[in-house]
Each structure stands twice: as structure tokens, then as C-alpha cells.
Length: 403
Image 1 (cartoon, rainbow, N blue to C red):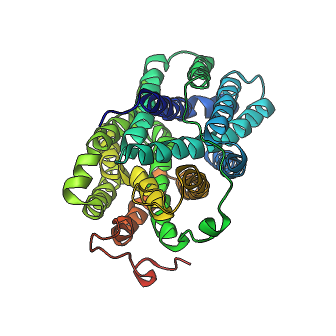
Image 2 (cartoon, rainbow, N blue to C red; image 1 turned 90 degrees about the vertical axis):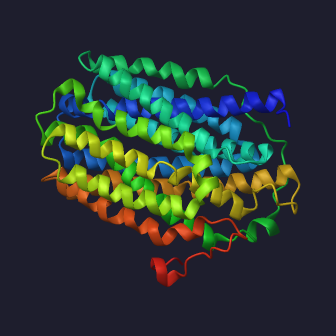
């Protein structure tokens, strides 16, 4: 069936939002060694700054949920992109530490708004298409990250201020034709009927993914810089091959899941991810560590898109749901996705803050934490199975307390 042109344009616009978010985020994290040197920030202080940013991102996601109930995700995405644009520009050009910290706060709020609303857009479009397309959106984020890491490699010898140039990318997306929503009166009875318990189990899986993902993208360049004799211009190799491998697996993700099922794909990926982090932790040289990060990207790539797809399906966002009219369904799923996005920041806290605090003496120890915890995906994987596949959700005793 041919896809309407307006829908195809909205899909490209939403993918551009993911791309812009990935480009900006990796452009910043790849230059963390330069940022910490410029402002004389140690690992513990950086962990506190990252904690502030993650908490504000969570607040931004909640803001997106509340405002999207009255307006729509497209309007909030545009606002979030403007905050990201302003934040990254000032972070790169800040004249003193106070302005730098303020810019990180603005960027944190924008990060949360964009994270929530891009996924709102993606889930709504997946429902309109009637087939899985979430991996391709997250692949667009990865492509943006690859571009950001490549830009950092190319400009690594230039002053930090050049990072401000990436602010034009989110600004351009502000004018893209995002998917609107006809305003619907919230269906409080339907919202109350959302089955949060299985959504929570899927959310725990996303926590584990973002723990690994944020640890790699935040601390990976510093790990190469502090642990080895890595040339300063090559520290971005902690994230670039990771993102390339992740992007390749996300492109292939739809086919892999269709052939083998989400449960098996997730379990194999979790074991591979743990093994890859073991390579990082025990790496004797920086090229071996880069190999470990690359294998890690392939192992954990599809956890996030499968998490959002599963949460939307459980909330009633799948094409089989005929209880609600389309606009009321999208309104409900928007709210669920924004709330579900909080799991992102719980994982980010574990990845960015705990990895830095535990690894304040040695980042090898810091990366040993996600190496063990990512194996929690193995029992949680059953929660991702579509209803009717014969794979039951895990009992609470299988995964610890889920209430």
C-alpha cells in the first residue's frame, strides 16, 4: 500500500529530530576531555554535573508529557530543539564556569523534551504505518551520533568553540513538517486501564540499556584518554565504532526480530554485550578497548527501539487496538511514552553517575558495573514478546521486585 506523501514527510521530519539529538549529544560527549580540561573538572565533579543534567532531562520529559496533553508532541519537540540549540551553543562558547553550568542545565531540560517527543512522534507514525519502524528512527539517532563522532575526530585539534556550529542542525529541524494531532479529549477511564506492570518490566530492560549506552558515550572517551596512551585526537573512537556497529544492527533489527523473535535477539545481545564490556575492562591497549566498544554497540543496539515498541503496544498503541479513536489513542500513548521515557534517565543515572563515582579511582572498575548488570536483560526479555506468541512475561520472582 502506498504511503501518503504527508505521512512520509512527517516520518522524515521525526527521523531528523532523532538525527539532530544524536549529533548534538555525541558532539558534546566526544569533547568531554577538552571540556574537563578547560574548566578543570575532575571525575567526581563531572559526575555531579551529569547528575544535574540527567535530573533536569527527567524534568523536561515530564514537562513534555504534561504539555503534550493540552497541545501536541510536534509543538513540544520544536520547543525542545530550540532549548538544545541554545544549550549546546553556550556550552561551547561559555566565558566562565557559571555560564557553562547554566548552559548544561538548559541543555538538560531540552534533552528530556526532545527524547520524549521524538519517541511520541515515532510511536504515532509506527501506528499509522501499521508495521514496525521504531528501529529506523533510533537508527537515525545513531547516524547523527556517527556524524557527531566523525566531526569530533575531524575537529579534535580545533578549539572547543567549533562545537557551537552543530546548533544549526536542531534549528533546521524546528521548521520540519512534523506529525500533528487533532486535539482529543483525554479518556480518563482508558488511561486508568493502561497496564503499567508489564510496561514496568519492559522499562527495566530500557534502564539496563541506557546504563550501558550512557556509560559508553559519556565515559568512553575519558576511559581511552585516562587509562591508555591514546592519541588525543583519537579518543572519539570510543564512541564512533560503537555507534557504527549499533546503526548496522538497528538497520537489520526489523529482519532479525521477525526471523528469530524479540526474546532470543535480546538475550543473545545481552550476553554479547556483557562479553564486550569484559573486553573493555580487561583491555591491555586502547585498540583492544575500541574493539570491545564496537562489539558492545552490536550487542545492545535494538534494546531501546524494542522497548518503546513494546511499551506502546502494551499501552494500546498497536494497530490491533480498536477501542479508541485514532486521536484519543495517540493522546494516551503520548502520555505513556513520555512517562516511559523516565526509564531512560534512570539508566542514564546508573551509566553516567554511578560509573563515574565507582570508577573515580579507575574507570576499569566503573565499566565492570554495567558489564554485570546488563545480563539482567536475559530474564527480562520475555516481557518484550508480543501477546499471543506463547512466550509469557516474567514473574516478579524472575527479575526481582517489579512493583
